[in-house]
Image 1: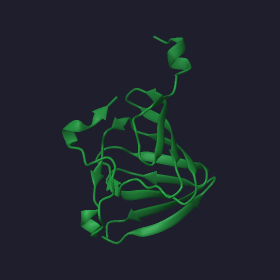
Image 2: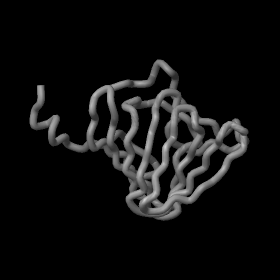
Image 3: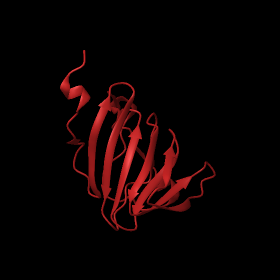
Length: 141
């Protein structure tokens, strides 16, 4: 049954992030989540992949460096700017690094708490932040 709160959802924080803010704008249960990510200049997320989560993003403002791996154990980089789009399918190793303050609109499958950190695999010191989760920890809303 539809209600006013389904049609006009209220945004809410997904949780504390060292790199900035992650705001859930809307959740369409078992279909997709719609978020605003605000990453402060010089900050980065962990080098990671998702087991189930499939995510896409649109750079609303700023410049963002993406580190990614296409399966050959070598990290590549790409600089994205306002208007650019990315897609991280499940299992794609990636990391976002804010070269300036960035705002990103993200749409993804609603798999929350799905993260495998892989800095050690690339002989990189693991940065602070959210740790690897187990398959059983993934929340599908």
